[in-house]
Length: 291
Image (tube, rainbow, N blue to C red):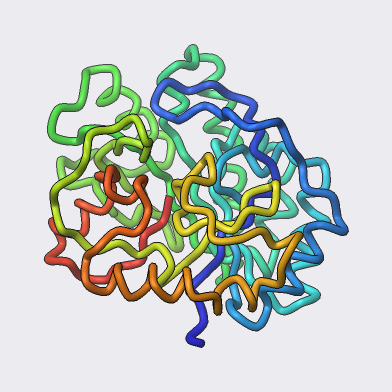
């Protein structure tokens, strides 16, 4: 079977923030232990060379974060990381010099709710990391904001200006995806609605990358089709009960993949998901979805 671009491994579903734009955890709080994490890595190694360390939750909150990165390295697995950035000051040296962490997405939207002093402290840590990683060719850093970029509030514009000023880059109306330093980019994307069974049905016949470029593994071991499936509504198996190979070779998963190839949706969550509509805007190009 063709390898996945990456697999999302949720090392914890716990977060240190409660941001209004993010879905809140409705599952029992869980932190993977080292044996569980290594079991997952061993299972998925033949099927990907890269992992993200989240589905839900803040990965830097996990006390074994650095150990997990090193375990992944032992198995030849590259690591991508999405973080709210609050705890980055504890890991600046580790991340900036890592040869194994190849992408760092820092979600800046949490800054909207911080006071000026908190914003300054946070951004100082970001700049420290950027400066220390300037000689690390392996690390791509994406400073990300999820907003309605066509209707930015003044508060959001002020925050973007502040960020741009601190990283010594002039503000531009075409800031989306702009390269602000070597290996560092600022991206502002439209805020999305998290998939939920409570949402209305989405009638658009759009492409979905779940099960094609990636899968997710929740901290309870459930293997899910979607990197935005926080509750396991697209569960195709459990990696602590069956091997990953058996899970992706079962008839259910084959049916799901066949359906998606024809823009048909097996799970109710997929039928109500609007995130997939963003690929319509790109002409249904199979670009890599990252959240």
